[in-house]
Length: 546
Image (tube, rainbow, N blue to C red; front, side, top):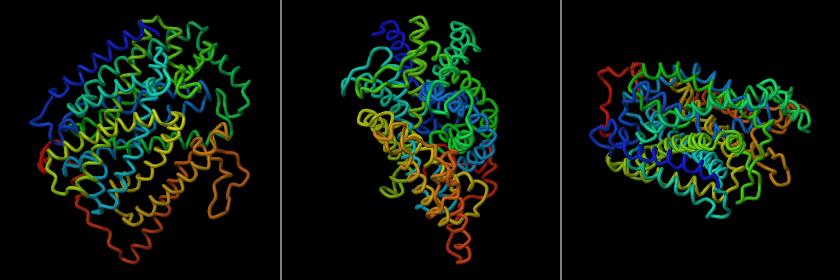
């Protein structure tokens, strides 16, 4: 047991717990019994709150643990996260402003609400809602991977159910203050989380390399390690085989991020278009932090870091690479601060993700198919209960399933959420796609994407013959038995392949449907809705009946 680290960690965890409960009275509206207030913080967050909230939502504990761990294990491929977050903001700048405006005018809480209004199709909205919920669940579970890595490093590494007791306690507390305070809790805690993360990373990138002869010596050590490994794709530079994978993974991840319901939740909670514009300009500051953080993975190589064995599975937990490095090289008190930064970094996105998934369930499944006459108070109650179910479902997921497999499911989540791009992002600009084209394209993209993921084995093909990653060799791409890239060992991100198939099928079915003059639903939005700002007269009042 690392008692100093544990005491510092627990003290800071207690601080954010208090903040989580206090948040119920922070910028409180007339009631929390409405999704506008409980799930979107009253739709009145300004630039600073939104910056911390969205940043805390995107740059999660899993990111801070897994990105450097991937760099430690594979080298240059792990840096895909850097161009991904660089190209992200220019791509989503204008679509997010349009999504905020139309959602503010009509009172939309979820992306599925927008799809329902844009196409008048409850089936298409249901598809978007279910995809969002399913894709978000492993993302929540993966926050636990980061939190458990920290707990394991501090000595809380028991076997069986009792080994997960600290995790249960942490998420019971999270569930309680999220239930009470809604989105205000992670918004307030995000201030503490981001400040801690910035302090820890800036100290780490200056202090740690100096202990091992500077960055030049660190990179030389990494080169020596990768030169001795049998995998030709590992190294401080990309190989000819994984350059396409790197590019498509970065672009695919950028297109997918703000399709996730939790990412849109922070945007819809903003006060106005100006807040979103300023944040799209300022949020790349996190990308600098991410690039510095990734380099820490190289520092762990000359430091001789060894992953801690997970007592529950008997396998090394590679997610403990960064926590172990901090425990070895930092003074105990500062290592405790670093562990708290990672642990609190798990709570913020986990809370936002569970709220977003609960909003989808409430608005687009419960109200649509179970209780059409649900009052705002009933909706809020249903969302609070659903957020509890989602959280504890994620905890059960980690306890019952090998965490390495859950990481693979997160890759599946990215492939799945990309299939909603035509119905959500493209629909912000045009209704050219027919509703049946969108549904058929989604079905083809989802089916093919998951089947391709199923066909990819892990590093150990015997223990893991399926769902071993998201990198697909072009040789394996088959079109009704035809292999257009036969013999090619070049790899590509599965999500890109599935999305291309989705778009092509959606376009083909759209052409046929239009020739047949099939009904394409009713658009309840107007062109001016996509440009409305906070001072527009036709905005739906906050906390009004839906």
